[in-house]
Length: 370
Image (tube, rainbow, N blue to C red):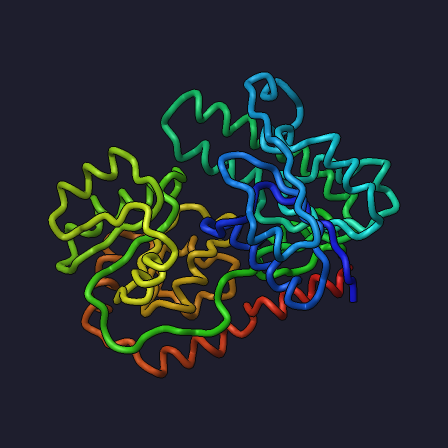
């Protein structure tokens, strides 16, 4: 078994409070539990240095992430060009351990000749050019739309750097198909790491329908507005919208809808309680890229789960989620489920399918690849 590993992360993965960093944090935790010495390299912006990570890792290196406008004028994607550091390369050269690059964001040095002899693996968190193209299609702001379109083109071109990796870990079945088509047998499935070790769903009924997510993210803000403005007025049940830093438009929409309340910036314990006590975790999404980790959290800890078809695309979790793509269909399903009890049979079905998403199984697959 590999006993030492470099990990290059796009951000400081603590606190583990949104999709990508959740995956990184709990992978590090699982590696640590197996005695693997992790040398963590992370880019520092908007987050504090972490004592928790420094205890789990053999060494944590921090690098400044400059985000000046001039870095936009480059053939490199902005999310990659702002994550380069000569000091990072120098620190990677201090040992000869394998390197795990977390996301395309962190792959600036993947093709460096100085790392040619090293075992290099990429954890693909998303098909990034598809994600940015989708963001462009869903915004009406001209400057933002232009940025997303340009970034999407640059990401598609830059993605060819994956040819320099020894292995590529895909996060979902859909991503696995795309990556295998383009990069062949070096691609393997690596389920996301997360905070859950067992299904803790409660039986019976809850008193509200919950939408949750990082409300600073445009995709989640759009979904939350969809819930408040188009679904909640047509379902006679309490709704709760919870997440980080809700915007002005969402706050106003909630104020105008009597059966919706907003829980802004809940801490992890408060969010866990909201998920557990909800009758339905309602998670509509309009992009099928990557893997929505909040889906796993809802399935391990909540009762019924309802969403659009994009929520479960390529995840292997379709059997556990009620899906529909029309407003009328979603409203119908929500009205039906609020009358139902969540049962022991529902929980046993989840246990059977979610065993494939254990952190230990995922880490052993990763270590085999190294």
